[in-house]
Length: 251
Image (tube, one colour):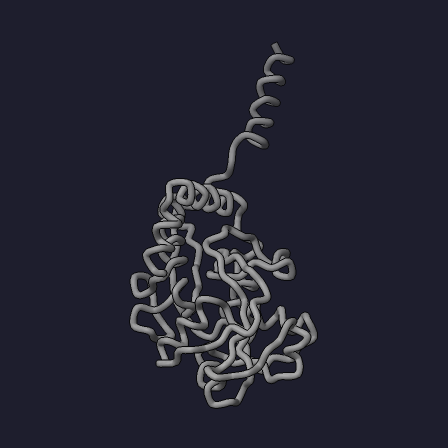
C-alpha cells in the first residue's frame, strides 16, 4: 500500500512539473509601449503622446486582437523618443515594445512574438538628386541621416558608417530637402509616409539594402507562458486571414 501511495504521489509531482503551467495572476498586465511609426503604429491625432484607443496602425490593431485572444491584460501608450522606450523595455519586467525590428544583434536582448509585419530598409535621396550608390560602403562618403537607436541606424553603425542621428525620423525629411544630409536611411514604406505628411514627394530610392520583420519585443523576464499564448494567438490570426486584412486596410 505504501509503495502504491508513493507512486501516486510521484505521478502527481511529475504531472505538476511537466504537464501543468502556472497560472498568471488575475491582475497581470503587460505595459505596451510604441511610437509614431506609420503606418504600423501611430497616434490618431499625430501627436507624440497617446493612450489606448488614441493609437492605431497595422501593428497596433494586430497586437490588440492578439492580447484579446490570448486573454492577457495590457495597457498601451505611445510616447517619444524611441531611445527611451527601448531602454525602458530592456530594464523593466513585463514591458513590451512594438513595432520592433528583429535583428541578430537584438535577439538575445528580448523575448519575441511575431512577425507582425514586414518592411524594407532604404537610402532615400531628395527629388532631383544625382547620387548613386551600389553598396552601403559607397554611402560612407555622404552625410547619411537616420533615427537614433533605430535598427536601421544600428545596422549602419555596425557597417562602419557614422549616421547623423535625429531624435525623430520626421526631422530627416526637412534635413534631406534642405541639403543638411545627402541621404536618408529609413524604413519603407514609413519614410515615404512621413515625407507625404510634410508635403514632400518624389524622393528617390538610391539603395534598398535589407528586408526586415517587425515584432513585439518583450522584456526578458516576461513569463514564457505569456510569450507562448501570444504567439499562438498571432499564428491563429494569421491563418484566419486577419493579419493580411488588417495590413491591406492601411496600405
